[in-house]
Image (cartoon, rainbow, N blue to C red; front, side, top):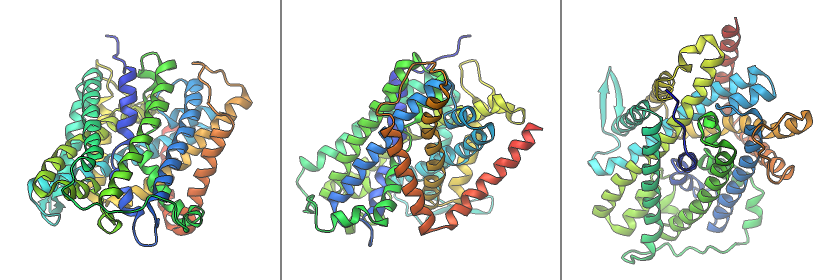
Length: 444
């Protein structure tokens, strides 16, 4: 039976759904905290920078994917352009951190949004095998299991589900943007969106770099369709369209959402919140109406889980094809879905939900993924220097300025991480070192 393929619509929706998830409804809660970003103008500027940054990455990834022409994202790219060890490490990190941790983080947010609907407090917990698990984590685990079952069903079924639930999510987001400006039964924040005297100083500060980390976490997923390159219909057209259009669309949505958040709620009301959508809609509509929005939005966020459950297993599948130690992960069912890889990712992300906190997961993701994304973007220069054949004929727009801008901003963020909290680098190494041992063990 011929394996099913993902259409241009599915690939684009997958990019959008991967990006619009946890970050946009949590980042601003940390950006407005004391000693963070002082004014709305600078916050919006950071989101513009994040969009341009992601777009530069999308340009570069298009050419790298065009030359390597294989599913698996950074795993395939770095194996081809640098060394199989580096590719394996990126795949190892991508499975454990890039997808499993991101799935866990998004599932935790779904749990937070769902709590008001069932009327339980965050302190309520259920005992499971002598472990006290908060109720929001139970909801998170249920969400992961549900989406795993959807994609075990098959590529076509999962693709249709992805299209519909992404459209539903965009409808809900559109409502959040529009409702505060047509319903006036609340007191807006009355903040000014004009630049202040502190704006220029803030742009060059460590606070700006730290805030950009949260923004880039929100934009992570702009490279999603490269993970399923081998499963795309007409990849020469589908890949660049999905990456570029998806990134541009999300940038506009993010700007509109953040403008709405700050128009409705004050910095004090937003500070430290990871369910900003709930906070804003409760202020606009009141408690009863916002409960409905809370439940609907927790369901809409499943699109992000779905998108990552499409892309993540493809990385594990490619590793399974190349390393006999992981060959079970390389198996597909008759409909083209890597069922063992989906189950593996489900188990890892579920363990992270149980034993980790949201903030820890996000900061960890920010460091590790930035390093491998930067190496992939630098691969454009390696391709040009070595004259590697461009199989699909896709070129990096804005070369060499777009990849250089991406590398410069990535380096700045990494410097901020290292200077502010060096211990995070140690945690990254703790994840990488086992990958080195497993690589050489699998080679034997």
